[in-house]
Length: 427
Image (tube, rainbow, N blue to C red; front, side, top):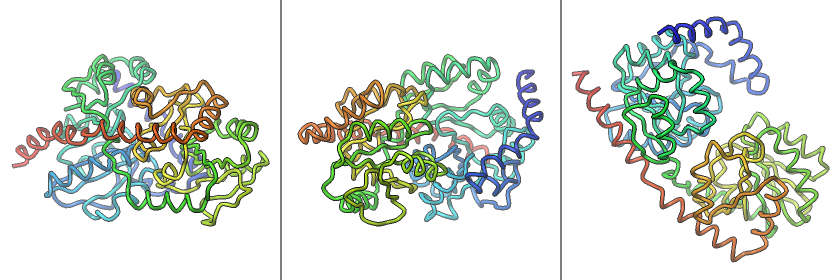
């Protein structure tokens, strides 16, 4: 109680900085200054009927939630579903993926973790249950759900050792929050052990829902169109790169890769597209942008993937891929999308956020690990130059992705008792 009081006091002390932070983020993304009232629990919209609430922080969690959203709507045809986010890109991704399901599915911002803002949110929407995607834990939100009797589950939960150390430093504050969750579905046994050590109860290992995402046919078709634009050139994809990675990558690419190899460079965050375009121009490599929607010229060295929601298409068009976020100490990204379409991948040394899935992909023969970018480019070129090996890694990737499916059904089964009990209390 005392720790949560101190935690809340810190939120009040930080209140003057919230507006400054939103304004700072709005320099790159003006959308941060939209719907500001929602971040304090004020909502102009309401939803009729029983409501399932699912929190997906940003783009990755929102895309990962797609199989679960559809499964929950199918299992509970009387319910609507509210998605909450913390970033404009997460919210825009929800509209892109679930727009056709409106008004049954709607998106808003989750309020900041002030007790009164949380209370407004819960009072306004009155969700039957709440579901947190992955490991987004807010102590006052958990307490607010406990007080109102709203079951709150955490699903597709992953917790790296680094993140676990951070929660351990929070001591009893984190332990109480984990202990009061109504159910937890962990991705792996290791995630489950780390969560249990932090006080989590009612925990099951349900697997990774991202394996259940089926590559959309429209994006596979777009991938073929990309391939036609590129022509017969060898194609190396740098997927979901992060700040600090593109500069060294471009230097190593210019030094190591022959002119016939095209680098398809897709930054993870859309607000960095122009920044990365300037990096490419300064490197002296000829640049084209996907947004120009033109054929890729023979002398173009870098094709900048400045688009949202097309990663499956980029993977489908590539001969092999370097996974971003893994070349600096950023934790990496998951290789599941690449494996699902049969694209061989090379990951760097820093994959602590996706340790299990990267190790599984390597063990399955769908991926290789490199020590640094130069080593990674060398491995990628070896794969590109060996069609037999490239085909074998692609097939291994598809088998790897297929063999780990089923997490969505296990997650729905985990949530079903909470739905049943909540329905019984409403009667």
